[in-house]
Length: 402
Ligand SMILES: [Zn+2]
Image (cartoon, rainbow, N blue to C red):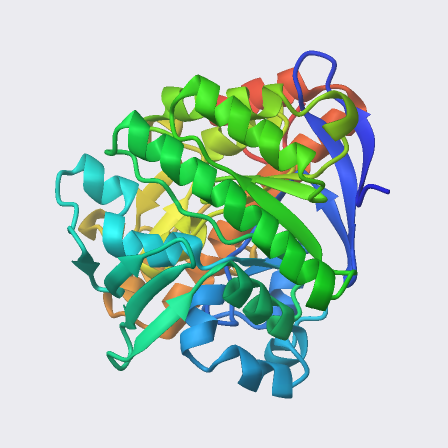
């Protein structure tokens, strides 16, 4: 039985609206999933996240394993009780963070600043068939993560959705490396499923991760292997390309092979969350997204607004906002805008690095993204996705879509 009930489909695309059932309740899809990397959506209380309209958050296996430790969290009754969030939680596998140490991020690769073998997260000692040995960025101790360890940690965290341990193949490597790495990810998938079958909670949904980089045949093949493995859900990870057009193409390849018997498996797109990417992702048949962008920008004084030319961003720390009496965004129901707080005040708080400023901008940005997702979902249910997508892409305000 599928965990995803598809309630409506957009006839002109792969877009679908549904309800994803987990052990801690339902997620209305398509949905954005805010990051609760270290057992908190930074700066917010759980009820504030729920009141914004979010059904699920994403915890981070890598960080929680290193500190405070998954066994300690299990002692508190699991991640839900530990952080006071009784709604669905998805946890990533730790693969992305571990491999970021060795490979650098796509962004740093593109900028040509890729750190070979070391960065602020620590250092990789060895990538082996068994897993990855690395140095903890916290205390320098040697740690190990492999498929079984990742599943055990996620079992201790008690997340509703666990991602399998994969190698996040970087962008700069050649096809041969991507191919070998993707094959290893498939072997690791089998080991994850075997561990979970023997020791895991059957109520925890396991998502396989499609790799294959930017190579059409590898990406399609990987997605097919994952789908055929019997995992209840599929995440799309690894290198999605250097620019948006390529990323859309890669996601298109992946979801193009997920029809038929795989149609009702929920699909998660890892690490993508810009407004135009969310719109396109929904059209390509993605059900859930996660991304650090809205919350991270908020902590750095940047607000999401209806401005496609500026990637829907405005940097409120700029001096020109000092005497701006307008709210961040007219008509926005978030606490900052609803209270009528001015851009001048937000600028001052952000500039002074006041916690309240970070909180207000995090609330605003998450409210903005949530309303975009709510519009897209409502549009699919109403059969008006093309109009809504056009409106949002053109910089129309969420909540006012046709
Ligand atoms: Zn607002």
